[in-house]
Length: 399
Image 1 (cartoon, rainbow, N blue to C red):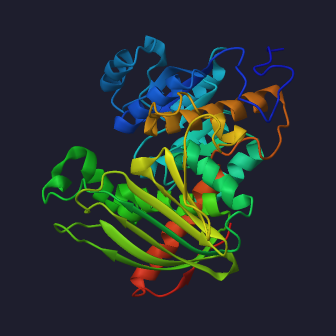
Image 2: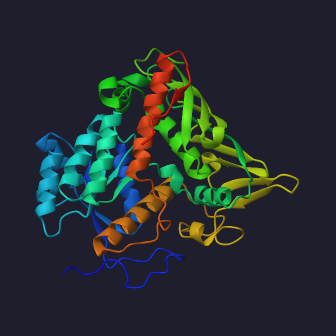
Image 3: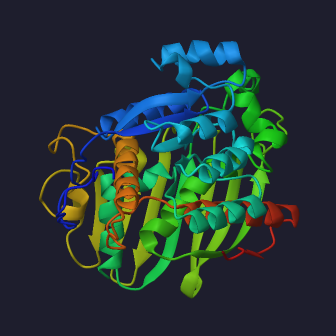
């Protein structure tokens, strides 16, 4: 019988507990985002990155494995081979992160679920709704942990915002506005870069580029904080810069449960915006605003009262649940890598709880699940359908 990973007694209202050992993490996909995620996983102090399928070329896979300090027998040229061999090892990976281009998410995730290995997958979850639904079913039937990298929901002040909305402090929600504006695709020749080409190839990226990438982040964030599912949308896709096979910009009118209206905008051609993810939620009693470029601050405005700016740190209006994610004191900035580390911390807790057979409280962990990933794919499909219909209102398929 294996030793327990979590302590015998846990205060589910307190900080996340230490594990009896670091969990073993595997990597599928060797691009830039895999390095970011590995850095964040290590920052959480709950993961060792020990194996990977970093290239389909055996020589290249071995070379990349050495760069990652993997043992020679733990560098694989096939994720199927990796899944089977790691599952057979007594010291095999406890979980895998999938950071391949979009079209490989489904087969890779399916292979590791079949091998009994927990999965954390980049977004969009898949390029097809049917594949996303299949992963939801496979994860449910297996009982395994399946997280999705909607990392923006793991910023501390986003968790604080979610709690404020849930408390009813804003009153009845009456509108939701979210935008994600970047500028890295502004140069006309940007599509020639190797790391950009696949994002504009429908065979790899799927039916969208901008919407499937940053648009899904915006859609998830709005629903995560508001607690309201998006039900309908009308979308227009645009190519605002040099000609491209897929859109670089999208504008949407949106509708949420209870007929709450909103807007969603996403573009990669907004000079001066780098991490321009902004969320505004307004209600009958007040509103809140968050800007990822000022991620440590949350504006809270209760109508008729002085405006407030809450900041990440201990105390000063920040809840104990938010403090779980605080690593440095107020005034010592944290950012995206720390948000990724928060995701990996919660994912580690979920993996440990599953392995220990622990039934944790439903509200203990807020990391995005496979169901959230599937909802993102359905959002993309609705946007594609609406754009093709000239911007008609389209109902988002329910899971």
